[in-house]
Image (cartoon, rainbow over all chains, first blue to last red; front, side):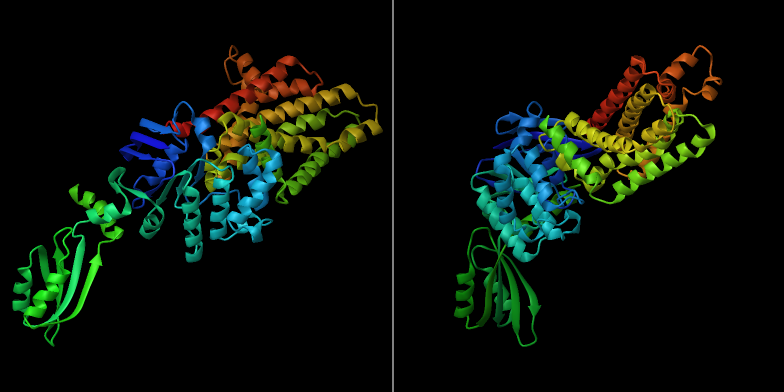
Length: 315
Length: 238
């Protein structure tokens, strides 16, 4: 369980994290979403006790960040951005070193290391120098480092960075599996990743939380939730004016008039009203023909764009 | 305690992960032996005093190159972020690195053993001053290491760490030397000579192992290790 209250961190005159509050419960995976430089990494560094905040309160597993830093660090597994590792060590030596630092009893250490090698798919590179590994493998070694002591809290800064699509799916599944019994925060600027793995999302921009909720909630909050594209053959102005009479229609726009008399209309309905059937009936009743009717759902991308560019416009 | 041992082991092994350590030790042994034995047969005295008085100058370049990596590389690679978020105190991290560098230095110094053997085979050498000289060398070396380690924590560039450490050690060494002392007011001279790294080593070279000198070196070591911890904490003041 992680509780963050009114957290603020400044670097010189720039405010990296500006009065943010959130909570993550056990068994929950929280996605931290934001453009580069939004304050994701800074927040994570505070939670992992790399540096303290200027003000605010953080409780991790009911331990205070300022008073029980060492105790918190024991329970947290942290994967920093781009997974920094000692280049001149062999994978096996590195895991052994981390295991000792993590105080895994030596009679259990070998088994733990073997488990990590298996879970993270490191079988082929055990005796290689970390510096000679590809980025994907380094990321896996980093993940093994994070998980080796079976921490209750996982803080992952862009965990799938540098992985190929298959590996991304593997790691996602792994995080989902592990996340069932743990408290997980992961950051990303890749939206599908977050909507696929996280139960809840916090969108942060310029150090402030600009939105939060489940992926579904976030999408339904999006302005202009549903957009319908309709391709209709018929007199353009008449079609447009008839369609406008539909109750619940918000906006209609002809986006691509064709010389053969078909027009592609982009229709925006009012929130939570489905007007696609109405469109069909109007067209049919008037004897026109409908050659295309597609619904476009708002995606997390739209929400993200709205929230992160909107605040810029306000300044 | 076990954290210190883990870090010491890891750092010590990483010296030998590349051939540089071996090249390094060999170069050190060749240079010191050459500089010592060249005038040795001319002077025709079975004493190691010239050897010990040589060491502060060889160490001036040798020791910063042992320590330059220790923090600068952690900062460059970003591994410091993991090291400082593992359940390790700053003190444990600093001591672990310090002991590793000291172990490396100790091995190098102990490998000079053919020199005292040769000297005592060739003449009637006095064993007491030789042992005293070695003890003093460990203390002097450890003091240099603590300075180098502290400087390494200030930068992420190893070359800068090397140069700054050499300069700082050099300054601390010469402030106790005669030609510096004559340029400052006579009242300050004793303070300067007491603070100089070299002044205390002169006694040791002569074969006098005074507890005041050892106490001085211990204070230097503790002072710079303390500064090192503070400089790690400085990330917390940003």
